[in-house]
Length: 355
Ligand SMILES: [Zn+2]
Image (cartoon, rainbow, N blue to C red; front, side):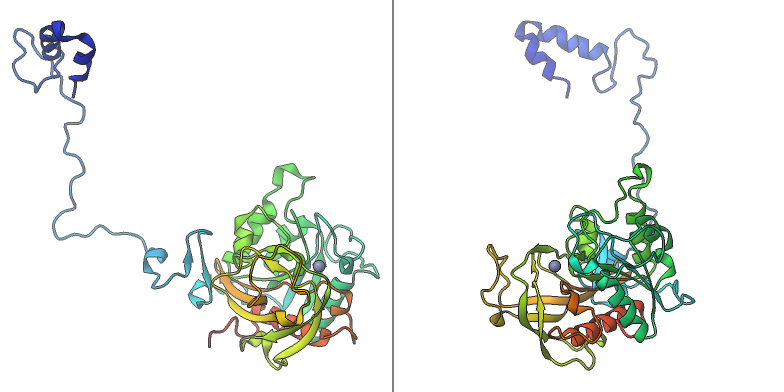
């Protein structure tokens, strides 16, 4: 109320204050004495917020959050994600899209040796003999009837991504979606990737794709609320398939492989785990400090994310993991896993199925 000022005026003036308040219309609108009140009506005289008429319920738009019977909506990333197909936007956006994928290997930081010499701009630039990972992906996908294009040009990714049933981030890293040379459109590729996922696209992240866009939370969510933390020595270990999935069809349940066995922080959530490394075969366990997932150390998983599909593996460090007729341990099995993962992300086979 308006009595507060009287505290500053002192007791002696309290009577005067009372008169002043009355003259200002600060009372209840009662008699003002000789003044002709020119309707000092308070501005908020209308009835506030009329209640809804009886018998009517205010209509509200469909709210996927409110309707979600489970926790598929991730309020941190503000997306629907997990293994429930309801998180897939089945809009038919790729119904007439050819069976093509785009391999994206632009590095904006340390470059893996198996990516070789940086490529030129544009779509399908000339490959160098040392572009082992990219050439290996093209070859193994071609053998599966899938045409692969490739680029290290962020503007090509941003402008062409919707032409593909899947995009493969092949150890593309750091600010891979930011073209610092084009300051007026630095978020164009991020926007394109986000909308691509929302229209039902497929994302495949390989190895140092866990090492990209660290400061874009949406991307970390795309990886499964997971990220690279550190890694141990590049050495052999046993991979165990931990779930039946179209991407693991006809694979041995256990095979020896060689990699760096990325340690993860944050640890993936809401995903379907596909494969792990048997940490008892890694000696020493890893470099310190270790995030603490020694007993269950996943190396591949999948999820629906913001309307699209995401299939992910932290494996793929070595040249011999991608070469034809490789003598690298487990390379043939790994290549089959990747191809089948790509096919599922494209929608050519069921995706990330639940038991
Ligand atoms: Zn590596």
